[in-house]
Length: 256
Image (cartoon, rainbow, N blue to C red; front, side):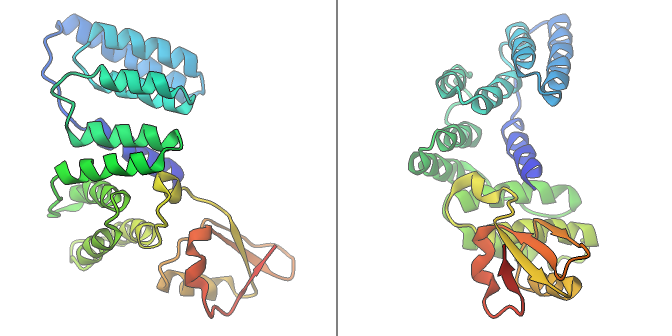
């Protein structure tokens, strides 16, 4: 779940379009550098990735994609001043957009300034258009918008929005599971920002009937972070702390 949510966040901020005046040769070279940077990033070579993204940005200074990639690296290394500086270096046309405010909020959140982050999430939400779902391709934008809605303090609206779409006939089983997973995250959101959506194993449930408990948790909209089936007396199910309030009267017990 954590990797999925991080991917969605960066998908959101990469989704704006650029009017570009760089030469075709420079654009192509920048793209090649960016692809190489992505490979370094996937292999954990952060400094190399920064170097290549920086080169790409110099060749294609009007593209915001490479700058956002650099912002992601600076956040990862907790170099928040550099992240803010890079954000403020974006073209004027980008400032004042939902992408700008959501990115600023994300940087502030990672700095530990959650209240300031939430103000930026609210501004991003205010400037964003809701998503109308007509086909499967609209589901990810729906989740992106609903996540922002939740971060902005409107989780009930986000949950209701997804519940409505869950009634659509064209949804496949995997579509429904995808939406339900995020609906559950938003429903139990506790106000801690993006970290609230990270997959955690805070609580362990011990059970002799793992299939039965999994069905009950699904009915209660509780996401499972993992399971462990061993030859011990009990099987184990792991969940995040925020779902604890949904465990009331559950015929299982929290164990060490």
